[in-house]
Length: 488
Ligand SMILES: *Cc1c(COP(=O)(O)O)cnc(C)c1O
Image 1 (cartoon, rainbow, N blue to C red):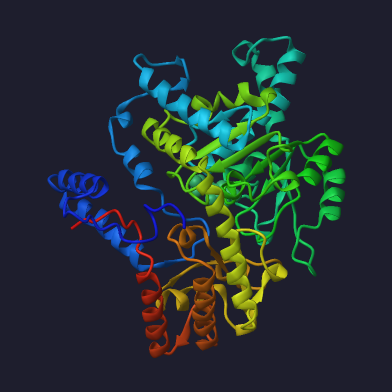
Image 2 (cartoon, rainbow, N blue to C red; image 1 turned 180 degrees about the vertical axis):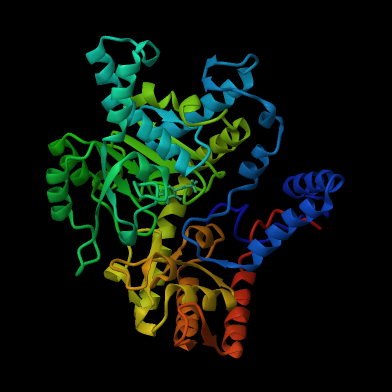
C-alpha cells in the first residue's frame, strides 16, 4: 500500500540473481569491512534491530534505499560554502546541480517561493531562520539609522549598540509541556540565550492551544517573533489565526514544521492548517514524517530569502552536498501521488491507535489526535513516563516518554508517553494492526506496578513482557522492513 521498497511483500528475486539494492548495500559493507569490521557489523546490525523493533517513536521513519545510497559518495569530499552559483570555492558545478535540483523539488513540493536546503539539522534550520529574522528586523534598520551599507563599516560604538539590540529581542513560542521544542526559546538551547522568551500553552479542559490567551500574551509582550510548531502536540494548529495575531502585534511569524512536514507535503494539512500561505518563514527537519535523510531546510517569503541565503557561513559550516543529494531524492519521492496516500494513512493509523487505546480506557492528552502522534497520560496507571517507557521497551515496544500539560512529574520523569505512526505506516501497517498495538500497549501499562520508592523503578511480570514481545514480533513478521534489501 505504501512505497514497496520499505514495506509490503518480500521482493524475492525469482531467478536467483541479486537485486540492485541488495547488491549495492552488500558491496558497500564489504568495502567498509575491509577497513574496520566493527563498523560494518554495527551498520548491518542496525538494519536487523530496526527490522525487529516495533518503532512508535514519532520523530523517526525509514528513508528509502535511494535516499540512503545518495549519501554514500564523493559529494562528501567537496567544500561549497556560499549559495548556488556563488561559492567561496572553485569546482562546485556538481554541488550546484545537486542543490538546484533539491531546491526545485522542495519549492514545488510545498508550493513555496524560496527554499534553502543546506541546514544540517532542525536546530540549524531554526538558527538560520532566527538570524535571518534578526538581520531583517534589527540589523537592517540599524544600518539604515547609522547610514552604513554593511556591518564592517560600523564604528565600535555603533557595533556595540547593534549587539545590545540583538540581545533585547523577544520571542513567543509554545511551552515545553504543551509540546513545544527546546529550540523555541528555552534556556538549555542557544535560542533561549538569544531571546527573551515567553510561552503560550493549551487550554486545561480541551488540551488544545488557547488562542485567546495567546493573543492576549502577544498584545502584552509584543514579541519580535512568534513561533508556531511543536514536537508533542497531537492536534492541528490554526496557522491563519497565529498569522493574524502576529500581524496585530507586528511580529514575524515563523513555523517549525519539523514533526509534521510530511503531513504538509502529503496535503493532509491544508488551508488554515498548512504553514505555507501564512508564515513569513518555515523551518523543518527532513528525516521525520518527511522520510528523507537526517537534515533540515528553511522556506521563506521573498523579503527574507536574501537573509536566509546567508545561513552559511552565518551559523552553518560548509553544506553537506551528499545529504543535499539525498534531500533531492526525498523531495522528489514526496512529490509522487503515493506520498499523499502515505501521509493520509499516517493520520488514519494514528487515529485508529488513539481509538484502540481510548476504548481500552487509556487516557489521551486532548482526548485524541488530528496528526501523526498520540500522547498517553500514564498518570491514571500510577506510573511516571520513565517507568512506562522502560516497561514498554522491556516488552519490545519502542516509544519515548514526554511531558504532558502541567506535568506533575516534571520534564525528566514526566507523566506521558508519546507514540507516532510515520515509521510503522512506511512499513505498511494499517488500521487493524493499530488496534493490536493498542492492545499490547494497554497490556503493558495495566500490568506494570510502580515501585513506591522511585520514579524510575517498577515491576512488570516477565511473562507479560515476554508475551507482548512475542506478539509484537509476530505482528512485524507480516511486514518485512526494506524487503528489497537482503544482506545475506
Ligand atoms: C526534531 C525537532 C527539531 C530538531 O531537529 P534536529 O534535526 O534533531 O536538530 C527542531 N524543532 C522541532 C519542532 C523538532 O521536533
